[in-house]
Length: 123
Image: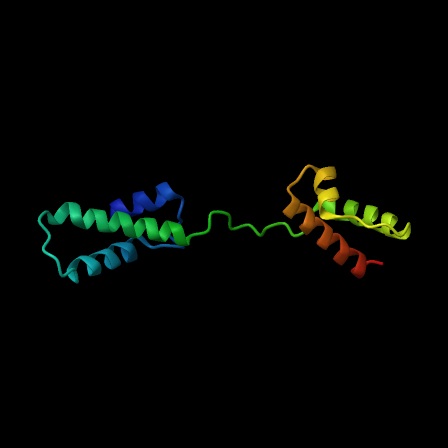
């Protein structure tokens, strides 16, 4: 059973440091033993519970452990454009930013907000 759990965890890309196969089997067996309903075919049921516990462990394990990049290359460009436009007493909208950079309106809003913060920190 532990080998089955180990293979399933490896298939999901979950390292043993994140989810120990023995722990997965122990949790599964605890659930099987505390089940109040009558189980007709015990062996397939046990392996199904182990499979479900492996799925839960895989769901809890983040796929990308690397930190997300915080800086967006477009923010400094938007900030430069924003400074130039505001110097001429005009405004920039999120729709304009979205159209210029070929992104959604929401991403345009985020870029514009990040550019304003950039200008506040680096006047």
